[in-house]
Image 1: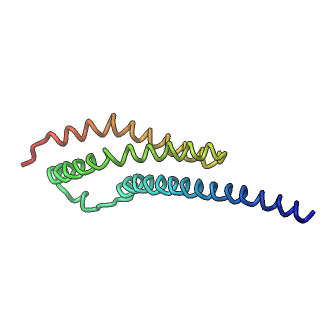
Image 2 (image 1 turned 180 degrees about the vertical axis):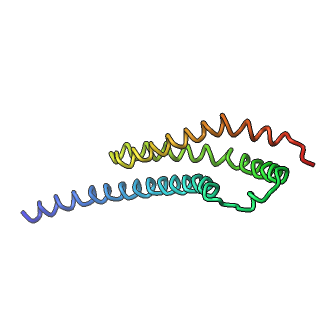
Length: 143
């Protein structure tokens, strides 16, 4: 009895170990994806909060021409970075939402989906309202 019981235990142990190793690898990959998603979303949201909270009070003391020149430089660098950052953030949000859905973590999936909807709405506003204004400001010759 102990020999057959030992065989069963021995036969079951590698299977359990393999399942645990597989789930550990999945856990690390999913944790990494979720960490990157939260980090990128934090950077993206942080720029908005910086402005809303009065991030640079010196802007209020600038003349219109100085502010326009400041905004031309800021917009130029933001546009250059967003060509990479924006699609990466969208890809991570979609991937994280799908990952949480397939892990049957529906509350977190719903929250991640809500973040995806908010980001999509923000991008809609940016492309339809902010970009035309930014192009207009970029066209001004301030020198």
